[in-house]
Amino acid sequence: MKYFDELKRTMEWLAQKPDTLFVGQTAGVPGTFMFQTLRDVPPEKALEFPVNESFQMQFSLGLALEGYVPISVYPRQNFLLLALGDMSNMIDKLNAMSGGTVKPRIIIRAATGPYKPVHPGHQHIGNFADGFRRIFDWIEVVEVNEPGEIFPAYQKAYERPDRRPTLLIEDGNFYNEK
Image (cartoon, rainbow, N blue to C red; front, side, top):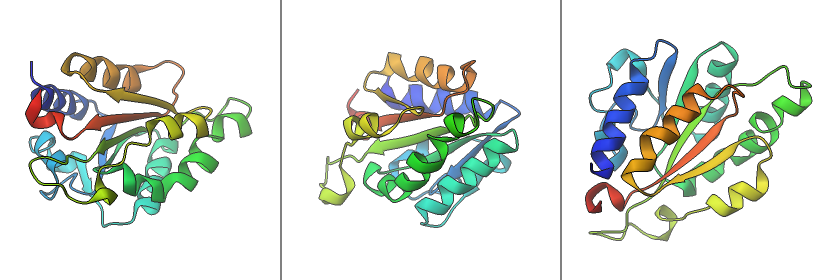
């Protein structure tokens, strides 16, 4: 199994769930390498967003509070940083602030941007997984570096009984390498 193929299969599996919606830049139209993994997701399951990372995260939280499981797509971790306040001060703290009664299940899909065959600039290739782990108490951070890790990680994020939000980090270089 290949990294890209496993991501595509996993996104199609998630799209079959009645409560999922894909939200983000290139969730519904081409524009980044991540779109190809979503190209066969039904259009009614993909909400294309403008470049407004903080609003996207807030919208994802709203969907989760209404019972949806949003898959919030951020093609570059560098730009996910623009939603960090919403993640660390709202999503990560809701469980504690509510005494364990509010547990919005959100799947945050981000990537370390590919730097091959063309280096896109340093603002596109950052990996902040270790920093995210130090910041978050409730959001679980999972790096998927091998094809065999992809489906189980996303399945756990969707099915987890504790309803913890999950940040899944892919490596854009592996789309064509593994």
